[in-house]
Amino acid sequence: MDAPEWVTALPAVNASLNGLAGVLLIAGYALIRCGKRDAHKRVMLTAFATSIIFLCCYLVYHFALGHYTGESSKRFPGEGAVRTVYLGILVTHVVLATTVPVLASMTILRGLRAQRTGQGDWESHRRIAKVTFPIWVYVSVTGVIIYAMLYHYG
Image 1 (cartoon, helix red, strand yellow):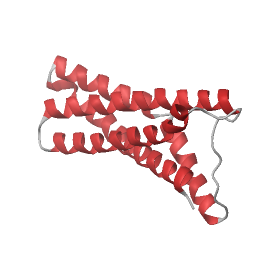
Image 2: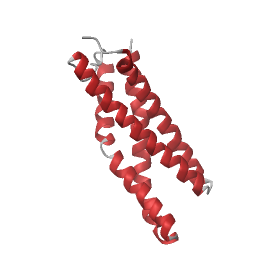
Image 3: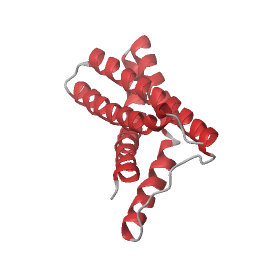
């Protein structure tokens, strides 16, 4: 049975959400570098919400695809070197993506606690953010690259 149109549209939605999260993360970084803490907080919370929406859509897509087609994912059509590049990006993306919900949650909670309790806790937030930020940006950007390679290769 073929998947309905709403299911086949989800990969593009997911790539858009990943791209939006990446843009928001970079904007949030720029805002904090300019000392705009409140704007940084709003943008980073929006990036987190965008990533949560992505995760929900991603899970719905794979569940629905499996339900309608019996396949839970699309196979990469390329061969040779391009397939090796694709798989390298995919593996690093998946491994690092598993860390983002935990790291992002810890970073956000530390930032909110620092804001509530005062200046003393900001260093804890900064330390974890220095780890979280590059991983989260990498996962967001490679999510878009994986979509482009999977659905628009060749």
